[in-house]
Image (cartoon, rainbow, N blue to C red; front, side):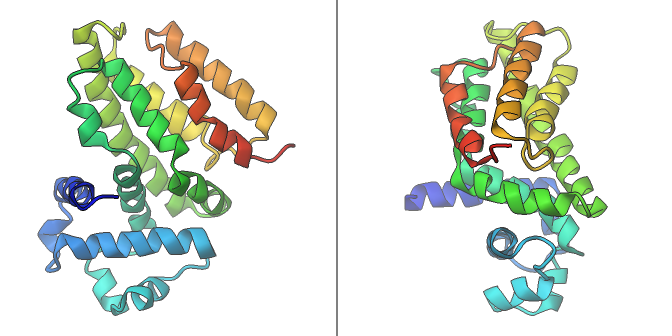
Length: 236
């Protein structure tokens, strides 16, 4: 990653933090937030969510646990921000959103391609999937990320697509919710750790459902991006 792209990632995520009004209650700069979240993501992957404590995260970045509490009240609250940080780390959202050379439909496709093919995303599926089943707070945080982040992003692009003619839907808010639920819940290995064959069938149904409501997301490039997830899934 270049210096410029690194600053762009931090700047994009800093805007997210301000929108969440986290910065208003912190006395630490936003770079500290990113250090905490980067380490939390790393430890969640390496040790698992349940085995990772706030003390582990604090020790790994040379902070006290009390300093962590200035930013997050518990691990569950941290997960939504970890997911958002991971999204902005793996998906060049601002670059895609501001690209005047492609349609809004293609922008959504590009977001999905980056999101499902990034190593960080694939690595996170399995530890989070194991933890999510037994932790209602963690499940709620994941749902909040889907509702408060992805749905908003998709809704904006769907409305743009209705204007540029690449998307033909009647209820953009509802279709944005459908798109977020389909990709971040129904076919997400974090929620449903399906075998390869079942996942492939669900992906085909997802394509049919979205195309039937005027959102033809799936094409050869998007399908190819999902191959990395399929390769990591169990055979049965």
